[in-house]
Length: 407
Image 1 (cartoon, rainbow, N blue to C red):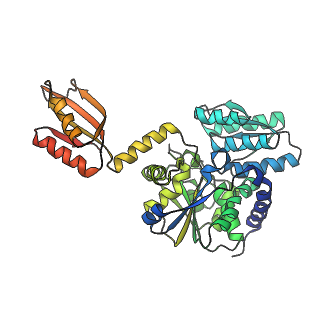
Image 2 (image 1 turned 90 degrees about the horizontal axis):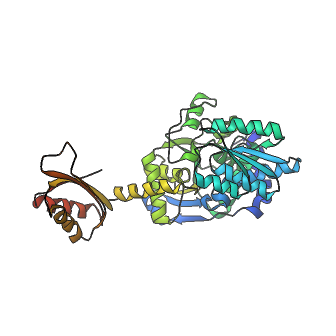
Image 3 (image 1 turned 135 degrees about the vertical axis):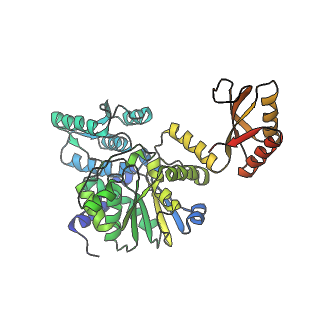
């Protein structure tokens, strides 16, 4: 295919970027997963950018951009971000000896704020949403004479991200499908530019959350459009709109953009933890989520980019519990028992006989909806699987206790 001048420029810059950033980044591993290959019906290779410096691919583009700015005599850089871009820019500025100011929303997780400070940045908390943070960042850049480092709509940033593709071409031979998470489009634009310039004729597919389908909407409209953004586990992909540069590259080089729901993202995070022993944030797991959900038709040999691992551990706890529940390894049952001594003990003895470990018991004697003389009981327990839980429910019913499984 004949590539645009922009795509060729990005691909050329990516080779320069790789030479520049190689001493300061990891050549992240690629792993063929037998488990995910079986589940997806294709050979699945996972490219672990969650193991990159700062925990995500963002350090690649930030390093190349800051390096180029230093060469132009810039004294400092500014960025607005709630997470991975913030850490990437702070790390890059420290690496190349520039000052950095990062404006983060007041709602940014404490762990990400402290990590960004840990890379030497001056961190300011401002606004409830990214746009308010960006407004302050632009003012600071003007007042101090610093340069704003955009998270995705920048040729140097895109080219730095494209270094992932240079590694892929060396690490996996003969792949025919690449799946890439999509926020503002900086990652997929860089990867696609390098792959197409290298003669790759396979499929390049982007994945964004149903909570923010901005790239899909913009492609349909033929221009960047803003979409309403809802909360998502894939918070790193919640841009309101793509950039004009990224939209141009995606429309030229990418075969399809698909969306993925929260349940599928949660399942992918859980499966990566349990099967691959890898912690991915929601954005990082989005590509695998789309593949396992059936949103993407399997190719023969598929590469999935796991773009980041800076997960909020409070959300991970909920994802794990949800995953265990879906697999039938944690059960929650609710029922009514006579409000008499020994009744709860009898129910718990049934559960214990089946070697199930009780996690939580809620014993409610004042629920106005329950029958007189009864107590409402909710029991959460670990179980080998759904079959064992069904046996427990049947046994309780034979003893006169009516419980139902909560879903």
